[in-house]
Length: 424
Image 1: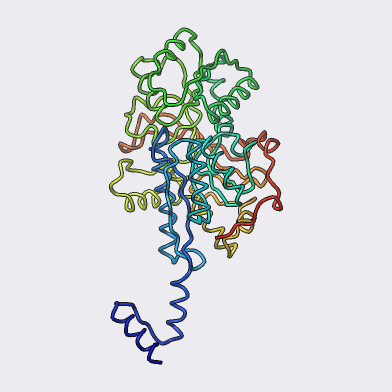
Image 2: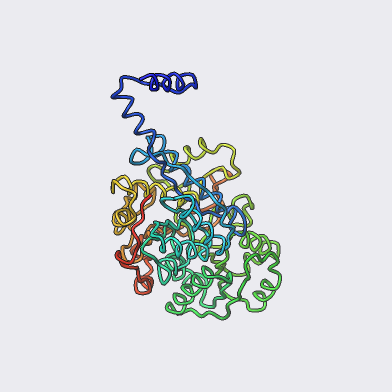
């Protein structure tokens, strides 16, 4: 009895909170002792996609903050653990291994570079850890490199090509050149573009391969001047596309032929100036869509991140947010963090257009684990409503019209039995 009294006095002297009656105190103590839910943010902070990696991390953090403000998930506070994946597959693999084995991450979220996403997903599948690829867009991510634990949240190169190619052949002409970043996303995106161009009566007259981290595009632009194609289809991303766009404008080739950029991420053009936003390109979201919830979402972004360089949210931030939010919703619905239970909540999941702030309902294809969603075709906005209003949305395509059918045959998901049970 004396020992218990001495222990209580020591706690009070140390400033420990004391609550009563005992029944309430016991409930409070049990809740306080619940293990935090760790989400590993596998996002680039450096390398070719450092800017976009920062943007998607802010999106994921906003979703996590909203859940924590409501008490967390399943009575557990959510802790976000970020490690720089450096736009490098080897680093992505090491980060995923460490987060799972040493930091006990319950889930992994993030990726821009498709090679990095593939590396992370291989580690995640080995342990059974559910992994959300938020922003990398190679068709292989939901095709031959799919995994039972991996879910792909952005539109892929085939989705965007479906939305753009047929119209560009009709309007601009049949002779095309492919300008391709020399890694898996570039290769697979250009492969999808080639197939659609040829299927619609066009011709690929040449494909120019661009090494990652290229900053001088002089030789490529000279080659294009010699070829004189009707259309240049660029599958170039990150800091590379920033350099390309500036040099195209400087050489006055932005109007020499039509330019198609399969997908244009917001951080890659924000702040470059209106002249650098030329051609036609795809996106899956824009901050001035006249849809329910968009204005409120923009206001929430600006209130939460008043000091950031990018003053309005773009598609990369949006993907980081909606994917993390959906993951945490599924954990709540499953009533557990067990990977197989959460996966079953995600497979075939339908998400309303209003909830996702898009034009059409979205769904997760159970055979590939890709989120099929509205794809928008856009160009530079020559009549902006405000300085940041640099995109003009030309059209929208429902997911059924742009779905990557080839991925369904290429994807071979591991069985549930072959996927380790994983729960933190």
